[in-house]
Structures are given as structure tokens and as C-alpha cells.
Length: 124
Image (cartoon, rainbow, N blue to C red; front, side, top):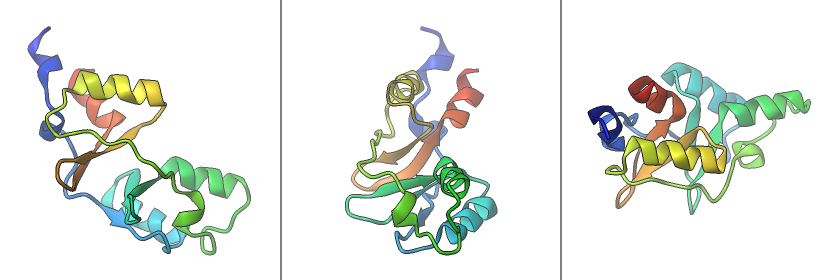
């Protein structure tokens, strides 16, 4: 195994973790993603959920009004997480298995986000 595949999540994850409330509108979440130049937000529900740019696109394509629809209406619940010391190749395998592009990073609490783009930039 060469050095490039021995990179841990903590070395490339995005921090600080960006969050949004479940009561925010899809429009508000989209503006936040655009301002931060990211494609996913952790939703501050218990347990936490996630809303992604794909969720937003799906809502708009279905004819929903982004100013009226809430994050709770489009978010994904039961989010998988990864620890910061997990190797990128293992995260890439998880993303492939689950068909996802973003994973919150959690230790004792949520601390960051790792995306398929982050992994591709390191391993590609």
C-alpha cells in the first residue's frame, strides 16, 4: 500500500462543520451551501441528519417551492458517520457501498465533513 492511500480523514475533512436547522427552508439551506461553497449540511436534529445539493435538486425537479419546503421535508435521516482516523480508502469504499457522496466526521461529537470530492483530490 503506497503512502497516498494511508491518508486519514482528519487530514482532508472540511471544518468547521456547517449545520442547518430542520425548520430552515430549502432556499435558506441552498444559500448557506452556496456562501460556504459546499454541497452538504448536517441538520441539527437528534440524531443528526444531512441535506445535500442533490436533495435540493430533487425537490426543485419535483416542482416544490424552495422558499416554502423545509429542510425536514427533503433531508436524509439516519446518517452514516466516520471517525477522523479512518483511512480514505475505507471511506471511499463506504461511499461506494452506500451510494453517497458526503459523510459527517464524528469523534465524541460531529467535527467535520468528508466528501467524495475531497477523496478524489487526494487519491485521484
